[in-house]
Amino acid sequence: MIELGVNIDHVATLRQARRTWEPDPAWAAVEAHLGGADGITVHLREDRRHIQDADVARLRELTQIKLNLEMAATDEMLDIACRLQPEMAMLVPEGRHEITTEGGLDCVGQEAKLKEAVARLADAGIVSSVFIDAELPQIEAAARIGARVCEIHTGPYAHAFHGAGRDAEAPAVLAELDKVRRAGKAIRELGMRFNAGHALNYYNVQPIARLAGVRELHIGHAIVSRAVFVGLREAVREMKALMREAARRGE
Image (tube, rainbow, N blue to C red; front, top):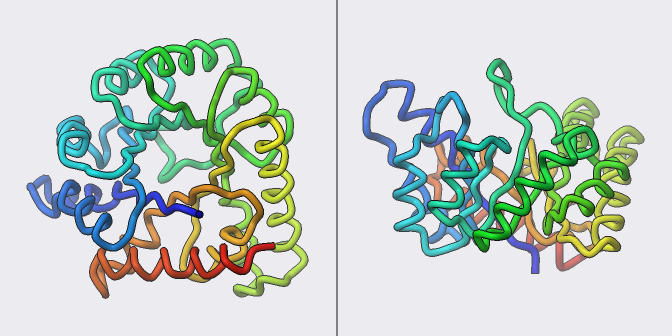
């Protein structure tokens, strides 16, 4: 059954705007869990712009569902992951000047480095995931480095969806959706788990959730934004209901 991993980075963004102690990401994780989240995702960035080291430590101690740590493949982040033991570590590209992650990880160009990172995570008993674009060479490289999970970057699909006025049947939207579908098929044929995420929201999530074999969606900004008006627990519940409805209909 399809699962929802809730990214709570932007709870910390709000806190860091005032450099104070609230809202508390650990409390957000509890509320997300009560709303039906199957996992909690945080991205510990090298510049510590939102989530802080202490947040990850508290979440590891308090979270009762799967903890997914998004991270760059650096020695510092690998040290942190191996010490704190999240259930999953997702390797992502990272730029100091980007607002959010702008593209998938280049597994082809960094194969040797990433293979070492994945091996180190595996030795620590941590499931490794890579955030990649819907491109066959990247998927094949992900398999070669030993990644157990591929999360397909759904940003291009989401931007096409928005640009087409939320018309799910627009040619540009269908073309991007088909790229994700074909990527998911290749991932599963290579024995890896097919996840997806980035820029998914309450309007565009269902076509992705209907794709064959998709195991988990990671969604953050849309849920935290919705939570401003209805609360985090309800925002998660609404997203989970949309995903489950779509998955039941399937392809």
